[in-house]
Amino acid sequence: MNVVLIDGERSMDVAPDFVISALLYRDPSRSEVLVGVRRATPLVRRFPGVVSIPTMGLPADLLPVLAPDLDLANLEIGVFPVRGQPPVEIGRGGYLSNATAYVLENLLARKLGLADALIEARFAGTAHLHAHSFDEVADPLGTNQSRWTIMLNYSIVITAGQDQIAARTNSYVPLIWTSPERLRSAIDAGDALLIDDTLNPFEVCIHGLCLRSIPPITP
Image (tube, rainbow, N blue to C red; front, side, top):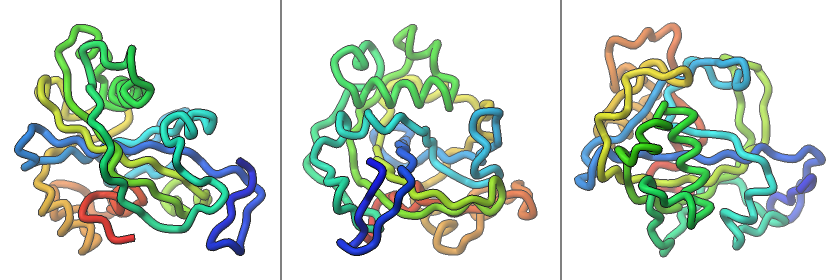
């Protein structure tokens, strides 16, 4: 996967990053979603101070397992909805029977501190793939390096254990529940303070491929 054609013309000789994102709904009403301000860690230095939904990088050899129908030889730039995907059970042993559940539970454990809640069956939900994305992603506040990125965008509706998500983790400080409408307004205005007016406007910004994937999606 060292060459990806774009619009059948351009190509690149550097393998793109492979990332998953998770849009978490607090409960089946879908009235609140989770966002966090990313902080740099020793292993993940990109995008500090950026409002984001939870994301995690994965090894590229998992991409054909999670998205076998994705045509890597002819990816187009943009965010594209995926419809008709069956739901996947998250928590309560779901990872044993499904690769998608396995990687999403890994994200929840590593990025949101839910390892114990998952082990003790205190957290559960249903997930589905709602989009895939491909673009060159800049990192002006961190490494200052742009990298081509393939992202699989998942939605997770939490059915148990909402209270197990802390207000901060080693990856996100703070974590904030907000309405999808307020998040959309903040994205459109480029103003993170519309989500939480206690955020420092000189240290926090709102942008990114993961946020562009949030429904409604415009390719």
